[in-house]
Image (cartoon, rainbow, N blue to C red; front, side):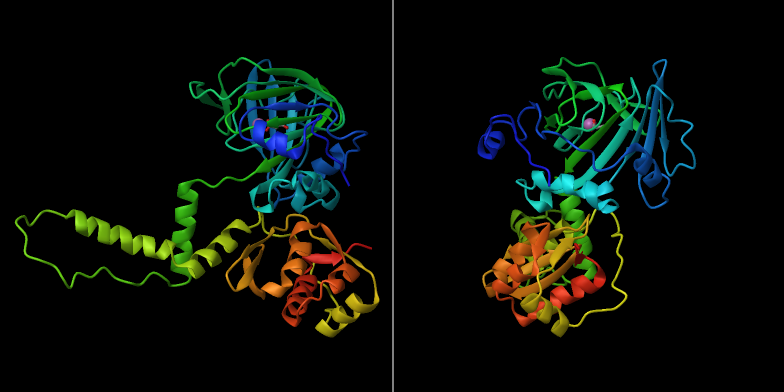
Length: 383
Ligand code: SIN
Ligand code: CO
């Protein structure tokens, strides 16, 4: 397990002074940092069809960007190149552990673990990200410059898929060593170039915008065939102008739309589905010999096995008036409030011991659900 230390700051101070406000250099955030993956394994992932990867080169100031999958790594030259692989937490369980120390930000805000391997002078160039990111330095070292958010900075596209930003003033200018971390809030310009072959881990966050939310809500309404109440005006009165849409009519239409957003059950179901949507399709290995509820109950009662959550899994819950909506990888499950502690053990811990679960007196419904999740391979025996 990685132990994070944010300089001498408490989590509360980091959140109130830096989170979404200003960048921070965290020297030795991970002491004695050990890389969970090496460059060869990363390259192996970048050869897979289902994994998103990019290779960027900057020879003689000419930026080139290539989309994976890659059949060979001739473009990954001894200098001026970077290989980037997205959502590695889905494919590499040891690397997925690097997300855990950052879960002081809730599960639903965490997006993925992106890993890059850069050769000397390699980088993606100066750019902005729309989301918060922690960049952990693994093996090697890299020279980073980070500026403050500046809405006047101009962005431009290089080599079609590479968006860069014009030169900026740096408030952090440093060479990251293994275990050092940069926190960069959304919109802060940054650039990093390897000093020697370097692996970097980017813990990225999600922050949906209104367009994302409303279009996803609209999809949910269509999928569930909801929202069929039609505009009506049984009390319409004669009026002077044929052309006018009156204020009252505008308000009635808004109220009709708002009433869907205010439908608590619909909203709750949609939110659970959308916020727990995994970054990629899950890489599931369902059990060959399925277990039964009785077998699981027996294990909880008599054996102590550690159950581990599969990398890439998104597990969140909403506390309702009468029950709990547990949402896992886009699926919602309703559970009784008495299962809150067991639900929290699943959502808040990467690994949960079966005797710990047993002591939380899970209901039959919880056991049935956990049996399904284990059979699907979403939780598995860590031994
Ligand atoms: C990288 O690791 O090369 C890119 C990380 C970032 O700037 O977001
Ligand atoms: Co970035």
